[in-house]
Image 1 (cartoon, rainbow, N blue to C red):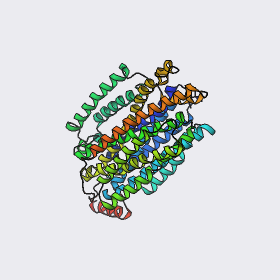
Image 2: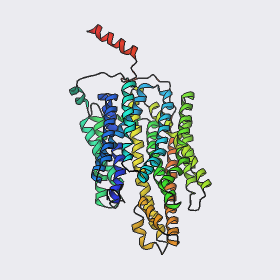
Image 3: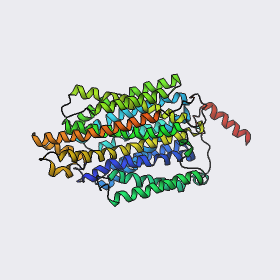
Image 4: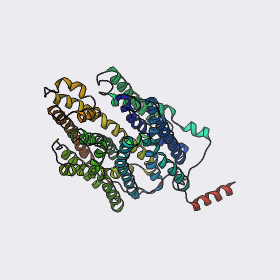
Length: 492
């Protein structure tokens, strides 16, 4: 895309980051709107945004339009993600939800594997625009099927009454604070140094804004954007902390592991996607088995503990990856963390919902979805900082690379092409060694994060999963619809 549109590396960077950023910050807003305006209208609204963003990006002739399209697409994508999970809490009893969340994890796993392969193939063999046109083949049938099959109860009211219920002050504070925090976190060390005022000032201002937002939600908001009650049990607090860590680890793996295969092992982007199979194809089976087991047993703590244990062990094994690691070795080294992260998807989703009253389940689910995405945004930033520092430190030990250390260590993704373009020799070997060493420190930090989450999970309490389904927007069958129609006619 950068070559075709004559864009800079920074513009190409933001083409990917803008989607993740808007997808993250708008999830609580769209989830909150769904309580007021109804789930189904917000699903359609999200689909329209995703459609519009995809078309805008596909037709773009410059990166300005690309960034606008990707940002709109991200808002729609965030809505689709959070509303899908919220609707499950409306329609499925708590004990059975593990099966549904495990299916979502399976779809995520398939998409994560297929996306880079299909996108890479289009960009390499056809045209990068098809990466965006392809979305339409999913959006249109999805919209039709939702219209046919998604029947939800919802009490209608006037538009004016709905608008009065919106927490406008809370929404403004939340969007401003989270965006102002995530943008400098994202560009720190890439576009501007971490000690630059452009990075530090928005971080400090946004931190203050978030404190004001929390106080507003607690004291003044009549219908708060975020119900702070969902954080107030020990189980919820430690699980949400684990959710952020899970997102950090997951995105660090999905972003930096392919770079290992490309920069260190010399694979093409498509083959690096294939090399991720041991990591990504283990997520779905683990999630489905754990989700079903939770539904059958009515217990979830074992899944949390075993998930974090496997994740910690798996990340520890990935530390062993080196330039000379054989194919058989890296396949088996990458398997364990996939099982661990996969098990945690349904386990943590169920835990957050079990720890709150049934009427707060949708709000708890929305926060789970947001914090997972928030962690994913942090994952690339944290990994990038570790990479920059360690890559520079290692390169300074090689006389051939010392003069290039500051420039080459700035961008892990950009350095891939430099390494691939170099002829065989000492410089290329030393760069590969430095790259593998920098990645090793990322895995060490991620292992430490996972170990912290494992320790925190010991405070998870056991709650009964056999709770009644309490929701205002549950599934509406034909019989219930007829009964409600008769009641309304009788009252009239």
